[in-house]
Length: 156
Image (cartoon, rainbow, N blue to C red; front, side, top):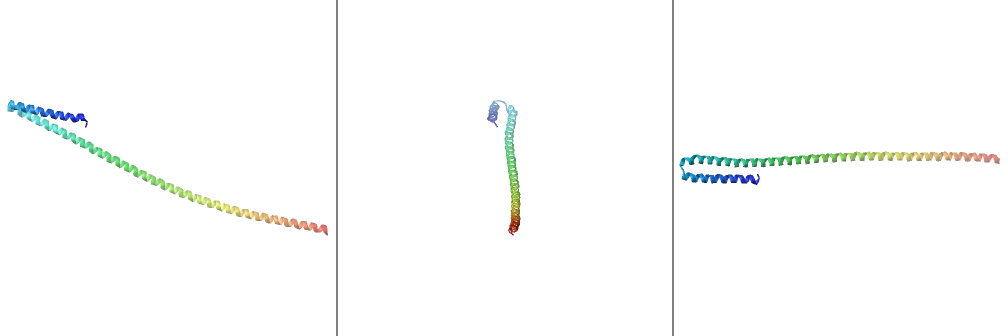
């Protein structure tokens, strides 16, 4: 509570005390019957004021308990959010690892395929060269034989 409302009950209490003292003084000076009802009213006023102060304390206590509950709820939500974040990060890491694994497998397959294609192309190139050399040898052989036949006719 603010300092202004804390000062107000003290002033009321002091006022009630001084009123009691004043009444007590008048009671000594005046008749005994006048003191009875006033005393009863003052007693009820003191009880009401005491109940008011107790109620203020209970309200403050309720506010503090509410604040603690709100704090616990906040901390629970923070913990829940942290847990959900951790789980999402674990899932993201798992998905990344799986994607890397798939990419590595695809890369390995592509490299194997490229290597096989290279080897096939090398074999085809070697075969093509062999055939070309054999054909060239055959052409050379036939050409040389023809040349010797022609040379042999002219000589003979």
